[in-house]
Image (cartoon, rainbow, N blue to C red; front, side, top):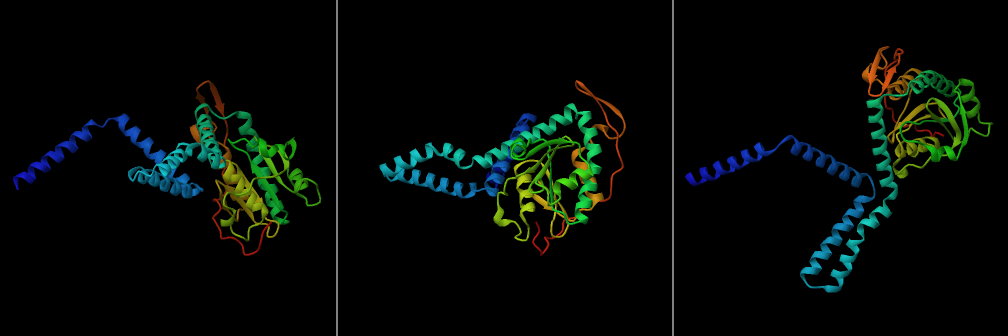
Length: 314
């Protein structure tokens, strides 16, 4: 009985010593390691890396087992295979690794903008462009004119812009209507907007990562929108050629049934910074720069997600 109490006392004393020895740096170290492990597990689950990981574990098992039972040839071959495994992973998962690094870069860019501020001219240009985009999309929706508009954010879309027709034009309802009119050469493709300007038209977008998992009723425009939002942090607006329904793709997720008001609110929330009172008509001071911006009233509630239409949409 007393022996058991002595063991428990030593256990709780050791546990107390462990907790007392943990400092702020140790907590930060553990938190960062947890985030890294979570990111790796998420990457493995959402890509083909899951199957590759199983193969690597089997190969490690073969290597260890062959070493124990003195199977020299298999042990040598499996050891050589493991030694080049890292290079094989980089080659096999180049697209996935590229997307991960791009997302990391876009996150860093957003943090930089929050720290040093957003360019006043860009904010003013988006403030002018958002009502025009919303009105244009609303009119295209009423006439069931298919449209695909990509809003570039932190991730630069030079690769997609280079395969289209560069315009660098001020946005207007009439210009959007002319671009997406189905008798014009530029209607077949996407418009890419950069810094509130129509930068290019007739641009082709990448395919989704897991196209087989997307609703079969969705047409090529919706699939392209999902693919573009998976490959970058862009916001992609789609107008269905079949139903006139307005949808938005962001981070690989398609939300639907937007109205003019809800689309305008979404664009303002995403494109115009809300931090540090920049939209409250106040002057603020940030490191190295001075920023001012004024707010406009927000529109109605954000759009709700709706199930996919039974009819195939373009």
